[in-house]
Structure formats: structure tokens, C-alpha cells
Amino acid sequence: MTIPRYGFEDTSYQYAGGEDGLLKLCKRFYAVMDSDKQARDIRAMHHDDLDDMVQRLCAFLCGWLGGPRRYNERYGNISIPRYHQKFSIGEAERDAWLHCMKIAVDEQAWREDFKAYLMVQFARPAEACRTQ
Image 1 (cartoon, rainbow, N blue to C red):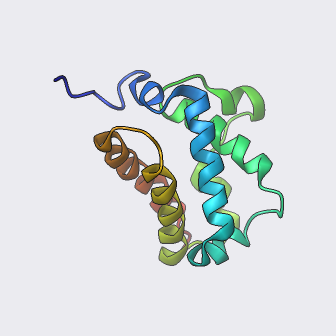
Image 2: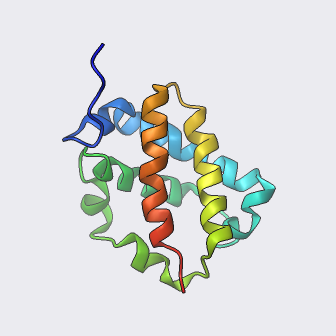
């Protein structure tokens, strides 16, 4: 069996199920954030209606995982750490975000090695968003 080379060209995007798979992930991620007590503080950083955030995160992940650059097409360029500078994000907030994402990732019908790969990748921008 050949081990996929995640992070090369559009491999990660394809293994995630393309835009439909990423939309499913993003919907679940924000549903977890909306209901999980550990995410209370990061949930408070968002508007009441999370639909726009679902769409924005999905668009970002499309390009970030090697697929179409949907975020740039729809919203323009973004620097994730710079965008989050306006929030107070420390280790607890970073960990809560990763907690919600892990739950959402674990519920997807993806290969276990792909899930593990994604969580390592998600940890990088999550850490970069911590503010001083």
C-alpha cells in the first residue's frame, strides 16, 4: 500500500473530500465550538451567527490544503495571525480551538494518518495566532 504524500500539490485537499468535505468539517467544527464548554471563551470572539465563519474557514482551507484559492477569490488576501491580533489569544484559547478541531476532524470519514497529519498542520497557525 502506498502512503499518501499529504501536503504535496492538492493531495490534502483531495483526501479531505474537496470543498464538500471541507465544508462538512467546518460546519462540525463551529457546531462543536458553539456547544463545547471548553470553547466558551473562543466562541465569545465570534458573532452570534456562525454561517459566515463556516464559509470563510472552508474557503481558506481549500487553498491552504492545495485546492482552489477560494478565500482569495471571495474575500482577498489574509494573514491568519495578523487577522487574529485583535483578539486576546493565549495558550488556553489556542488549545480550545485545537480541541474543537480535533473533535471535528476525528468525526470525519478520513484515513487516520490524514487526521493526524491535519492536526499537526492545524497546530502551526493556531500557535501563530497567540498574541503576546
